[in-house]
Image 1 (cartoon, rainbow, N blue to C red):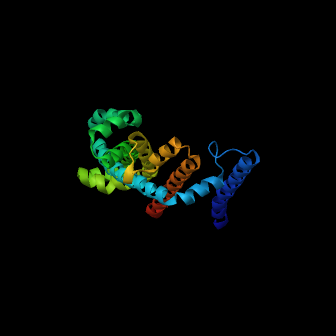
Image 2 (image 1 turned 60 degrees about the vertical axis):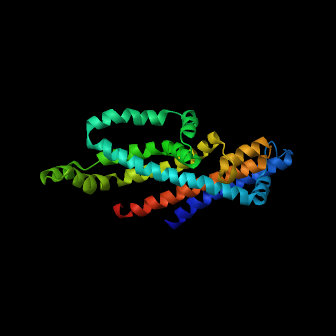
Image 3 (image 1 turned 180 degrees about the horizontal axis):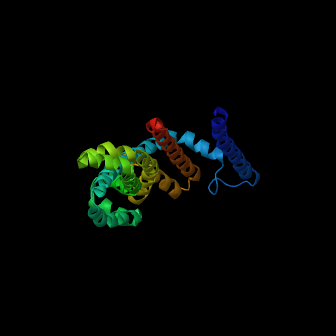
Length: 254
């Protein structure tokens, strides 16, 4: 078991080292200029030189990400609770939930940013709209996936709607909810970056998307790749944290 876990960790790490070595070698062998394709060493130098500014931008992006994730989880769970109460409510509201999901956020983000005067709130709302659908769909599916025998048992003892919801449906929905949370975590980061691209906000609250835009305007491609690297690392860290939380919460079900 431990050897399998070690292999699952070492294999992608070794593959990444090989890819970086080939990338570095290709850039040096063919003398590719950094403004076309920076080498890993150029990216590392940019990350070292501009580290404080990029880390500050990363924190700004993560603030929007966590706020959007919290809004998506709370809003998504409440909507799922509402939809599961009645087939009529679901038929009335579910089409609007789907419309909200299939509408490109880049099309409505400018309108949201104009209507919502506070930029951080507007960015959070845009990111939450991207992340909320998997929470709604997975939680709703989990709330429906109850054991028929247990449901009949609750009906036999005349349990109220609230008792059935919190003592039967919510525990049954927990695995599906955690799966939706894992998806929503990554989408919150994506939504935060997309919203920052659309808003193009600078200053002290500038996120990594603004740093990427500025680096592109200034043709500072190594710095652009350094910002992209930080987004990737943040995404992997959030995914790992959510996966660990999922294992911890569902451990008693194994």
